[in-house]
Image 1 (cartoon, rainbow, N blue to C red):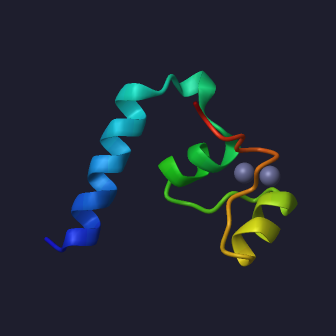
Image 2: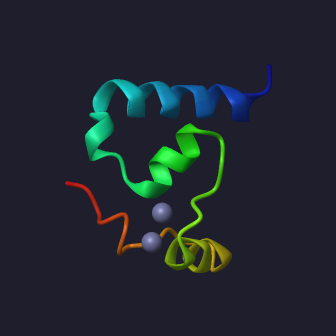
Length: 60
Ligand SMILES: [Zn+2]
Ligand SMILES: [Zn+2]
């Protein structure tokens, strides 16, 4: 198993245990489903190497 997969698994476990499904953003839901978010604003942000701040407001 490579390290990237381990990190992704760790993040995924953290997200699924620490965040209620109802609080997931569109991008997190898409990621959980193994896809990229299809929202135009998110696609644009991703193309710039960022995450869409409109749909993913910084968490405390
Ligand atoms: Zn999104
Ligand atoms: Zn967005």
